Amino acid sequence: MATAHPTSTPSIAVRPRRRALAPLEPVRAQSRWLLGIGFFILFFSAWAFFTLGGYVSPTFLASPVTMVQEAILLFTEFNFSHDIAMTIWRVLAGFILASLVAVPLGIAMGAHKGVEAFLEPFVSFCRYLPASAFIPLLILWAGIGELQKVLVIFIGSVFQIVLMVAVCVGAARRDLVEAAYTLGAAPSGIVKRVLIPGAAPEIAEILRLVLGWAWTYVIVAELIGSSSGIGHMITDSQALLNTGQIIFGIIVIGLIGLVSDFAFKALNRRLFAWSSL
Amino acid sequence: MSSQLSIQGVSRVFTSPKGLPTQALTPVDFEVRENDFVTILGPSGCGKSTLLRIVAGLDQPTTGQVLLDGVPVQGPGADRGMVFQSYTLFPWLNVEQNIRFGLRERGMPEHEQKERSDDFIAKVGLRGFEQHFPKQLSGGMQQRTAIARALANDPKILLMDEPFGALDNQTRVLMQELLLGIWESAQKTVLFVTHDIDEAIFMANRVAVFSARPGRIKTELAVDFPHPRHYTIKTSPEFMALKAQLTEEIRAEAMATDTH
Image (cartoon, rainbow over all chains, first blue to last red):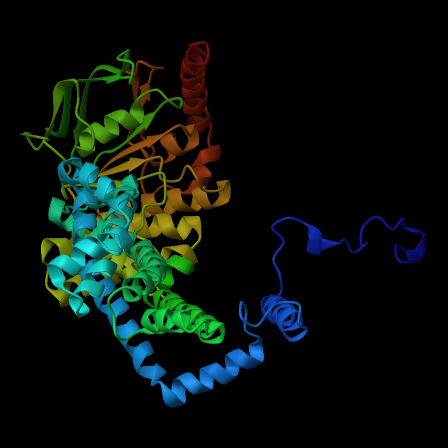
């Protein structure tokens, strides 16, 4: 019988290996969460240790406890939710405006090589212009109102989106385009029914990425000539050396970014279920 | 019967980025009659796919022209359906939407699209998979959908570029029988490129053997097995004799390619 001497077989087959250290080995969902949260805990512990332990002067770095107290004060006394709302509004306005201009332009550039040849060098040049350097000019042109802040975000996002969308539309699978031609598609049909749907999930990912960058521009825009917004609060706190409020402002930006990123990801997965099959 | 597809002196020279010319096709003359099932058999890289792409209008000949029902081919069109070797279903459309792609592009009424796609889904045995996306299908099912998509458009001629080349042997044999069955029940002109000798003989009325690069048609062979054909003919002495003959022809060409 084959099963007569199970113990006599050499034990080469079933020795569990240390898979956790193997490259590209996936991690279980539960461990993933634990590890992710673990770093936050570690980070805050280190912060608490150095500030509460008295190793760092409170003038330079507030402790987590001070920060929470300042945070409560911000909401109860200084109407911080209004600042948050203003900042979100500015980011969204500038980002949506940029998307409305940039996505169609990028699709046109990706689909038509002539359009690309015409616009690509200029857009590539503009892409390297730092949005924050435009602030003085924009104040001159648009004043210190809302339009100026929205324009900073617009300038910071629009060229990036154009170029990335153009590249991803231009990288469409040629065999799908050819298949569509043999099915009788006209050039306009190729753009509408092959290039755009094929690139849509990646365009959505590009927008998600650029939205993250837009958040960094808005704070810069609010640092100068502004009377509301998270960036304005940070400048105010800077004058008072209130590091607790500054850190809280930064954390709020991070949290909003995290939430919007999650929401964007979930939306993309829902809209383009086929691409993650 | 007069020919439906006429390939007249078609040649193709590719130019490399450095400007060096490569002759992929030496002038080819070839006629395909209506409802013919012609296979083009040749070693890889002999230019047979280039010829098919020129017929499809996806590539331009350097010399010569292709006539379909007497009209010169200018570019790709719905009258020449094509099934590719690579999986070319639109990944964002499900099986039914893929099959309806050409019909929708043509502006066919919704209910007619539905009727036609249902008909062809049944013909290729994909009932119950209408809502599946290409990534959820096996290679064989994807190619069945691709065949249905091409046929639903009712092209004058069906061009097939090694459509079963990426499939495993068992699936490939079943696909050949399926395609042959469709062809036997609904007559259609088919031009089928392959490097598989069994495949070339089993389905065709006529086999055109391509030479090594630069490609030209070396021999043409009629295949007279009666229809409907059953897979058992593959072991008949007549089939074996044809296969032996074609194996010799192809072998000589493959060796010629190899020494290039």
